[in-house]
Length: 441
Image (cartoon, rainbow, N blue to C red; front, side, top):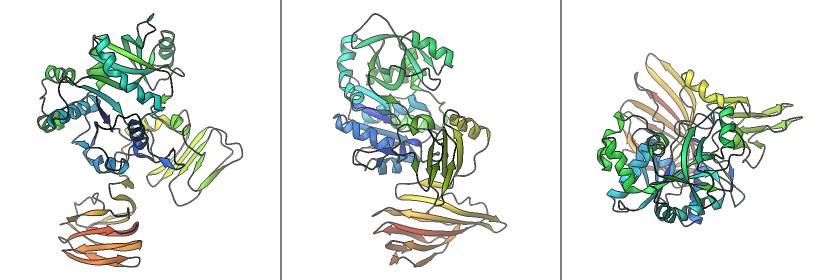
């Protein structure tokens, strides 16, 4: 069986920590077995490996997140990039066609589609080993994994199984996508399950859906069509159209950590970062990425989150509204981001008639480098704050250490490599019309 892990997401519900590039699956917040912390993506990949499911694992991410995905998985697994975000069905199809084109899978092989941003126990992933036998025994074309609802949630989709069958699986009667609370209660009375977003089928089943939609069954051809494709979800396009689907019930732990309320229940401490919770602050959470303290006094049941991109103070149950607020208000450019080589923080941005002056703190990981490139419309100065490495300008390499300063003129080819973790400040002067968004270039 082949597992395709979908690493998408818009990064809005966990703002201001998450964004369009650093989505929630990259947040290094969850407790790890070694006593440290790990990301959602790192946790899921670790569990898949422990379950013996990583030998044929493929990750699908947006092309701008490929390097970051490789970084958070230690480059242990292949990652392919979507040119645009076009929904879970399109991402799953691209992954399946990649396996087919690479000769790693055949049409009769079983393919399991799973999201990267979920929190489940180890038994959840061990159930994947049953999928091939269940599909064969049930003669189903599609298998789904569901779990018993802990409460009537408006945030999850539901699967209604046939009743009276106490076996390993049950036929699917219907689906319900994110009902209101009253609808969720009624679904729970029907013994409905939360949809965990995990699907298994033969690869040929996905090829049939591509043919029905008039889409090519070849990865390069599908990639070429991406910009003009609509957003299609796997639930709507495949699951809800299936006439022979079965659901397997997971009895253990599962959630998708899609809100501040669900995520904070999994964090190792009520306070992460500088600051504190004082007085009556029961059920509150503080996360602070800024280098200045944040203190909350006598306010229970809230999340207080600060990052270079903004500050959120919200009731835990109401924090999901941030997604609607961000959609209604045109978001300003992100001031913090992560890359394959490290991270950047925009310290200052000044526009004038002559162009743009941008000041950015760049943080390089050990043995990483900013890819060599040329900036034809901007000049810059690099000032090394800490660490050591080397800077190359037009092929001339020199040692770089704290206190060093390097000037790069327009059109000069340049790069910097870290021999230890490095911090440097980049001051860039760009011509009018250059938005300066390619930090580190």
